[in-house]
Amino acid sequence: MSRHGDSRSLYLGLISGTSVDSIDAALIDFNAGRLELRACLSHPWSNPIRQQILALAQDETALDLDAFGRLDVEIAHGFADAALEVLKQSDTPAHVVRAIGSHGQTLRHRPAGKYPFTLQLGDPSVIAERCRIDVIADFRRADIAAGGQGAPLLPALHAMLLGEKGLGRVVLNLGGIANITVLAPDGRVSGFDTGPANGLLDAWCLRHRGEPFDRNGGFAATGKVDARLLDALLTDDYFALPPPKSTGREHFHLRWLSKHLTPGQQTPADVQATLLELTARSVTEAIARHAPETREILACGGGVHNVRLMQRLRELLAPRVLCSTADYGIDPDFLEATAFAWLARQRLLGLPGNLPAVTGARGPRVLGAIYSAPDTD
Ligand SMILES: Nc1ncnc2c1ncn2[C@@H]1O[C@H](COP(=O)(O)OP(=O)(O)O)[C@@H](O)[C@H]1O
Ligand SMILES: [Mg+2]
Image (tube, rainbow, N blue to C red):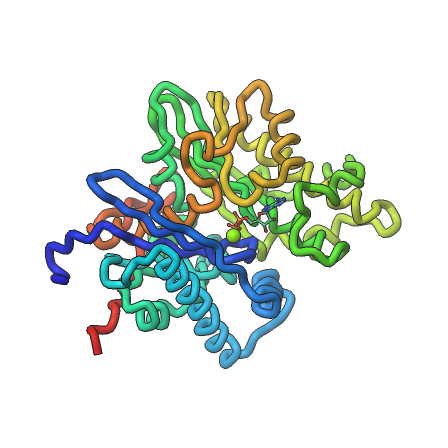
């Protein structure tokens, strides 16, 4: 197939978020300006590599350069496995896919300071070689180089899919970190990370229950919110910081939590209940402060399955309405992977992927670099 005037409309998006639960793959058809989810799957990480990524992302362990290089390639193989699996399951030959948009796995995100940076692993050349599809990767650094946060990158797609003139909406992504996209009634788009979500809930649950996540908030339900602990956690400077802002596991991790715990004061279940309340409160306060015209909140990300968290958010956000993007025909578990398919397409069309009003970058930037598939050999 000719690389010039390429008419292929299939793109594959890949991401593993800050929860490090799985690599999500979404095969998207951008036909005639519409966007159709053709196939999707979540490819779980094996426990040892998940533990290694989590320990590194939380700055709990140091890594020598050799181990770092190996991890970059090991993560890439996980991403390639996920891509090949979705192609196989959907009976899609590689040559009909125009490109893969691979976010990689974030190990560090430090958008502030003299030398701001963000670091995603998962060598794109390995993915291109194994899948025999062009790979677009490294989506965040051009925005950071332009003085932006490099995040969030989802708002442009949220606006395209869910913006409704005249109606104040927020798209709430409940991933390891929570972020909001504010779709104002006048069509303006803004957005930022509100703070922790599943990342801390997962980490505390793993430590005290040995389970990777607190299914439906069942563990939290056995405890009581500790008001003093909650207030102490909410005094963290991040919550009051004006946007643009973004954060990650290098800030909100268990050592951050431990600094505020008083030994013998709370049971593990109380802490879990307090962390759930922290997520619900910080999200609600961010919406009240920065999106006062909001009538409807559309949630996506793994947190939509946490019945207790959704219930608590619903109570705090009332009278605003909280629902799932599923109610608008959008699978809440694959919106992020879809965004990276869209970002890959933007790159090949030479169009910007960031929204400067969201990230704070000096201007719109074409995001990502192209790693070409090998010619047939
Ligand atoms: N039934 C459920 N109950 C509670 N939490 C859930 C449930 N299903 C998924 N999750 C949460 O969603 C997380 C994955 O969400 P995801 O959107 O993939 O986050 P990320 O983008 O950070 O990877 C899991 O780690 C878990 O905490
Ligand atoms: Mg995930």
